[in-house]
Image 1: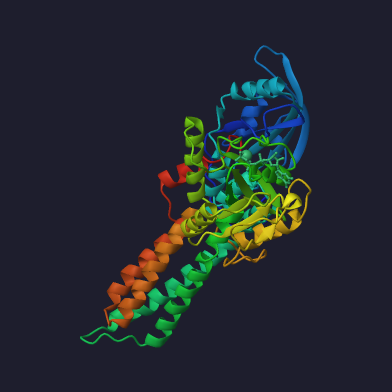
Image 2: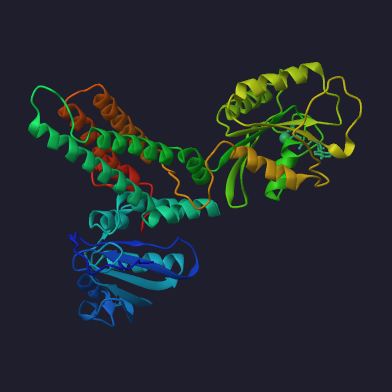
Length: 468
Ligand SMILES: Nc1nc2c(ncn2[C@@H]2O[C@H](COP(=O)(O)OP(=O)(O)OP(=O)(O)O)[C@@H](O)[C@H]2O)c(=O)[nH]1
Ligand SMILES: [Mg+2]
């Protein structure tokens, strides 16, 4: 899909590069497949192999029926070709989108014919990279395109949309403007400096920097939630063998993802499954029941359980209620709880349907469930979400920072703002403040792409699929 720039009237510096082409729809059988061609003389090049043109003489945003014909004069496919003229295209360049029949071989044949017209294959994300370089979108918006494609939950889609619409970019732009104002105040002062350092607008400058520090802090604070929304909440089920971990995982995902038997020690390796609840993605990890064992495979499984634990966003300990709680297990639970530290820890009693009254040790459970009977499973889902998001900013409508790259840049920008503030308090001269303010500006500029280098761009665009 090509997004026409609504503000095509505004000044844009479009650089048209050599034409590139790629299949932009997923490879497989489908009603239609789209091959995108973008770059200098895209229409003219396609005209070499398109019967039904010339596309080069057509208006922007018009669709034309025709045939793709190869060098030997054979008709490869009947297609519809849509013309987008510079600058009113996704990339900003002249673009042709060829809709052909959606078979694997026919699509490939159309692409090969297009390539034979002196057009090269596009690299992953190259269309979007050109859109960025042509000022069609800023860098954080381009990254949002990738996030949108990779999104696995509704919340992740929402967060990507928000970033795509430029909400993050607007925030950053406002921070930059504030820093530019602060710089102006500092530099104005420099002109008058004699021996005493004094800023005419000391209080105003102090307030500006203090507010900025707080606002960056507020935005940074959304990252914890943003990360969960984008990548999912890593939820690890642990407990003794036979506790019902695999049964619970299967119940949540609605299929027999993990093998369940009455034999203790059934699960040997960690098993992962994605599960969405109220728009939030959970990456569930079922683990091998933890116990002392001489079995080599099981030992390795237990080791992996421990590793999964260390990466968890939420730990769920399952205790089989049909078995007495022994002191040893009770101590173990305490150790896990301690090891989890700040990570939310949920203690769940399982097999409530066959709970035995007989108990050596008493323990407070967060919840008692029966996965087999479906008892209190809804409560369990609610509890999981609640605990995953506790102490986190979670306002579905507010802007979330979801990328670690953005988080790092914001963090560095904030450090510089804080050290400028410190310099101000310490009575340092304006040039000290200026250095920090300039550094903060640079950091913020890397988010929107005003400041970028090839390595950063390469690593961002290589996450895209070919054809985007
Ligand atoms: N009555 C009852 N039985 C259950 C319940 N949940 C699980 N079970 C049974 O308990 C046994 C063990 O269940 P699993 O889900 O394999 O337990 P696990 O914790 O994954 O066990 P390991 O993989 O060996 O660590 C199976 O026979 C299940 O059918 C429940 O809610 N009620
Ligand atoms: Mg299991």
